[in-house]
Length: 321
Length: 317
Image (cartoon, rainbow over all chains, first blue to last red; front, side, top):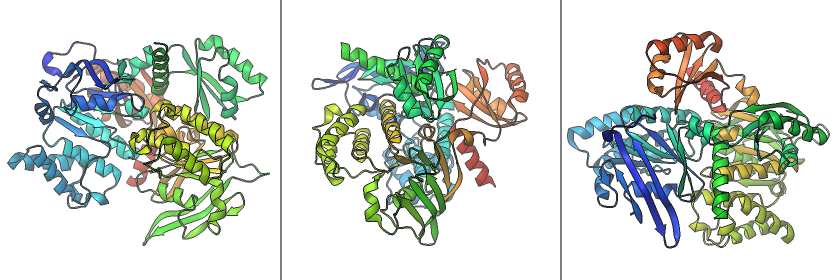
């Protein structure tokens, strides 16, 4: 998606967006654009400024500096126009658990000002999309996490928003439901909805078209998952699998040639400058400690490797500043 | 993998035919399991499959209807109060004292477990450092974000060294950097012989376990090492990099030998019966339709691929 988008396709423009709370800079000159039909994922450590950025983009919080145009409206000047054109779904789903599925949908329809024939049509759409046709009279309290999640999504898109904001939408939802949820997100994006999502889970980040990596309020990297894996990693990753990963971890931490090492199931991911050159060094080290391995080979970096390396490097630079 | 049951000393945790019913429905049915010292065992499964009930039974905060649990030779069901000093349990919502500070909460749990001053200070400092919580030691727990509360809960559960550590969705809302650091700490505990049992719905976390149990409606239907489980995956996966992922999925979904196709950011993962047989056909179909593709390669299934496939097969059958 490197070709420039027509202006009409752009749904979000953030230009040096900044938010200060007293002396603390929560969001520091963040700039990016997002287009119709694009799914953009915000990743970053707890407290990095992801939620604050989303609150500004949804018109809930005024920026201290910079500008954001969302769905064609300035978030600082016309936050209510912004809110009419966006859908928002939080990690808590914000549903009324003592009301039925249909009562919740009608309530949110009212909140978003959808009524009459259009409401009936949108209710039908939301119920069908969420797969809740046989459960419209069920109490929300009795639904499992996956159903609640799909209902919350249905509520968030009743007014056909141009942009959908999802704040950690799949916390505590099982894998099969999560995959089904992502099918829905893709079909919404296919109809041109611009989707902004925050997540802590790398398997989920892989679903995004582009990822915005945020650390200490700043945008550290922006690109597709495969671009980030290709460009962001300094060095190469060696996977080592063995009987005693704990002892291997101890042996390899801080060893020459080893830039970083992290446990990964029964194996370790070792970041080295040059896999071919450094592999014998590591093998010798393991032999000296009498640590056996069943597998050692270079692998492609995972998104988590990218995340840890970029955030780690950025935090180190921040400390040095 | 040689992490298995040590014959000389016995497993850290022995579970036999564990069953728990609520009303007529069995929430956990006939669970039998041995966990070795130093093992990380993960329970995964859909909502309501029984993960949390199992954790509560193992933690001796709930009594089973049938079956036995033995930790360190202690019968947990008969004498839960004797077993508790060997167990650390972190429920999904850890009971933090919101009006106490981070330090005071840790202090409280350290007192509860009777941890010596020198040990607790050193360990608290290490855990807080690992989770990036050091600057927040004087903050009240009620004022922490969800992710930070979770980290504090973990810190409090790890303040003593139990024989069995039970973690229910331990890193929900915790960022990847801190998660990696926690896994480092867990690996350290493995080295000390602690058996760790985790319930999780995140499969990148499941990949880190030495063995996994897949739960469905209270029964453990599969139990093995992640690598071994992946070999059960029916079919093979081809990843196709393309900027026209939606078009590509539509085109390949109806081809012969294609069992499913999933959009993944800037690629499509296609599940086929035989990758070497179908690669050429996929490429030809996409070329004919004018869909530009980049890398195309066979990839190993993730744990998520496997579970989605196993769960779908089971519910179909």
